[in-house]
Amino acid sequence: MATVNHKTLAADILEGVGGEENIASATHCATRLRLKLRDDAKADTAAVEKLPGVITVMKAGGQYQVVIGNDVPRVFAELGKISGIGAESSKQEEAPAKGNLLNRFIEMVSAIFLPIMWPLAGAGLFKAFLVLAGNLSWIAEDADTYVILSAAADALFYFLPLFLAVTAARRFKANEFTAMAIAGALVYPSIVAMGTAGEPVDFAGIPVPVMSYVSSVIPIIVAVFLLGYLERFLLRVLPATIRNFTTPLLSMAIMVPLTLMTVGPATIFLAEGISNGINAIFGFAPWLAGALLGGFWQVFVLFGLHWGLVPVIINELGTEGSSVLMGPLVPAVLAQSGAMLAVAIRSRSAKRREVAAPAAFSGFLAGITEPGIYGVNLPLKKPFYFGIVGGAVGGAIAAIGGSAATSFVFPSVLALPAFGSVGSFATLLLGTAVAVAIAFLLTFFFGPRETPDTEPAVEAAVPAQETATPTPAATPAATPGTKVLAPVAGTAVALADIPDKVFASGAMGAGLGIIPEEDTVHSPVSGTVQAAMKTGHAYGIKTDDGIEVLVHIGIDTVQMKGEGFTPAVVRGQRVEAGDLLATIDRAKIKEAGFSDITIMVVTNTKNLTAVVPVAHGHLDRGVPALDIEL
Image (cartoon, rainbow, N blue to C red; front, side, top):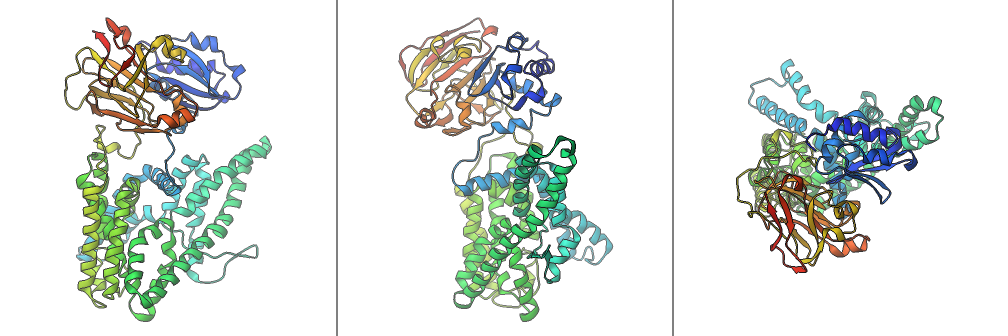
């Protein structure tokens, strides 16, 4: 494949399948372009098969599969450069989040925040330094310099819905600029003023309960999710002559009022219920109210429900001179910051540490937790849960002491003086310390350590894509000589007997199949993982001697989209022979109607003197399966 021009090949394939307009979607697995064509009759299969670099063409599972081999990611990337498919379409190959609705929701929010994580972390750190400078009187808070710097530090948080509109639109396949227009309406000055004026608002005579959408998260995500469906409907039913401008016109005209009349009222209703409930609990069991508020404050922030509590807090400050509702918020915020700090120290991922460290700093110093919540704690789940536990315990202690704030501040270390004159300040400090300690220690000892990464840390906000480009090994290690070991225990099957014509033909290289008898698949060689499919069904490993081994679990199991597969390695990771590659659920594979046969081939067989299968019948995992002569 070294002599193949990938750009030319991508263009030729595009032409051979009937052009971009004939491709409904495009993805790739370890060896194949997987295209869904609108009309198979428009594809010239014979011509595509003759292209230099194409091994063969298959039609299976409703897909038009162009088998290329190890260089498929490069061809796929070139396809994205010359058409509207490719990079964006590849997202369809990613496995959906597993588990319950909460896990899927967390995965979705984390993915939407991922592209803006570095700017968010930088803005949080910027704000922390600015607050510190103001508190130390280095810059007067009423000075023009402070105002200008505050605008720079706060803009990303203030206009957060605009940024999330772009990333959500990419996720939900909606028009990015229409989504931004809807988000812009939510933070439009007149709309913001309606939320603070306290006057009744209506739309065409229909009452509209207003709220502040500044810095909000969930409303715009819900709005863009619905926008995607609305746009696809309009594009389908509107006449072509007016479709281009009428679709965004109707989308904005429908979605802005709809969002204000549905998301706003729902959020306000929930927030008011929570606020009234917590206030009632404070009357007879302050510790319980403090535990609930301290534990769930960051959850309220996540859903935008905290805006329903803010007016209550401000009203308390105006009428009582202090607010007991704010006492538990300090442990709540700093507990999440403590979990971030533990991740910054404990994680093996340099990428994660570079987000977690400044996020913890801005959380402790200025109470800005968004970068750490969305970039660290929430994606890893356990640190977020541990932060909730710490916040609940610390919030209960703070509430027992009657801690209250005398001014509206962001809960943080620098804001502690606002809590010094009402209630027991010592109890607040104790509750905060306990909250931080619980979150930190639980995360440090029981949180995920993650897998070391080898890519430059500056790319932390970019999801790794499968690639066949060699990655240098982190440390040298001996390969198992010229032996390739069995990755799984089972019954050996000759390559020619495998029910897949590409592998059976030997086009992908010499090797064998194994009908597995266990649910773990291990590395057959020592080397560097060159490819690790996100669906968990295929892994490419290159040894220090240049042997390239592909372990492919099952036939057409890419269509399971990760269900039944739990990857244990990532691309670029160094593995030794016998290290775990993946855990599989053989029963689930069979229930889905696929074969679980594990195929192992040496993809650069043509560059070697000989590749000879030496395993027959039943074999144990780790015994020699292929004999390589370099």
